[in-house]
Length: 380
Ligand SMILES: Cc1cc2nc3c(=O)[nH]c(=O)nc-3n(C[C@H](O)[C@H](O)[C@H](O)COP(=O)(O)OP(=O)(O)OC[C@H]3O[C@@H](n4cnc5c(N)ncnc54)[C@H](O)[C@@H]3O)c2cc1C
Image (cartoon, rainbow, N blue to C red; front, side, top):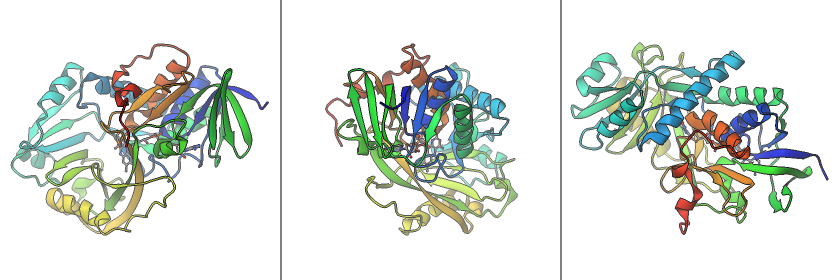
């Protein structure tokens, strides 16, 4: 029998590496296994930046989790002496005919999150880069901003290894077997044994069927970095943003030292299956035109030449809430999946939740919304 670990983490990306660090810090023997060499360009965490917002819709569970996560990102910055988070502020724009921010503002304010409710004219006055229809309104979060996602993963990786965790890179897990006394995981090196297992494989969840079958759909997503014609998009003066428009929901980031303004679309995208090639940016004409249309309407001076395009993967649950739970048939297997295009900001806190669940401690988070049982009877 190979060496026995307390926990094997399958997938050392955003969620897995954070959990690996928290568990190793608590003195457990941890083996992290990844198909690539995280951070990498194949999954859901690359492309430089991820928004971190606190004033979430859907009640208090996400807001509390975002605040916990924010605290943990600050701690990670201090531990690694690396800048991971930029508090650029985030401007959420919608059309009053589409969504109202009233409920979100009320929930956020109750939980101590600073938010400002702004009308179109004031938004354009404070941030001249925006050109908004008169019927727009905004919810500005001054303490929100963005994370450097690959740096975050590299930071957790270095700390996890320093705490004694082991990491196998370029090692896809081929099979998982649950036995009476623990879990056996097969890779090209042979079998690895542990008492408990965490599954955090992002967009590759389907490859674990039938061991784990959940209604999670992987989707190809595109992002573009566009040349700006004005200093008003620079990170020192322009916020991160979300835009609810008549033709889709977009999000983006200021120009970081000449990188260009980055924009992506949250809804839509083509389904991707793990056995398929992921088409590169530009393979479809709407990869660029879709993003450019939003810029031309709402930030015309940021609709310059395309400096860079990229593709990434979402893993969507039917309700776009996460899955953080025990395997329905194997209580010693935890599942962290379906982060539905908005999970990165929470990954620091998800690592703590997973570590608490492994240690059979009650997590300081409300996990009801993230249960597997909500999908009983649902398949995709
Ligand atoms: C374009 C884009 C924009 C986004 N914007 C935001 C944002 O602004 N804010 C935000 O909070 N979130 C955002 N997200 C979502 C966020 O990045 C994801 O929710 C998060 O990264 C998912 O983490 P994960 O650990 O599930 O996946 P990943 O980080 O991809 O990790 C999964 C890991 O599992 C490994 N793996 C898979 N199969 C196996 C196997 N069989 N054996 C071993 N290893 C395996 C993979 O190699 C990978 O490293 C965005 C995502 C995309 C794609």
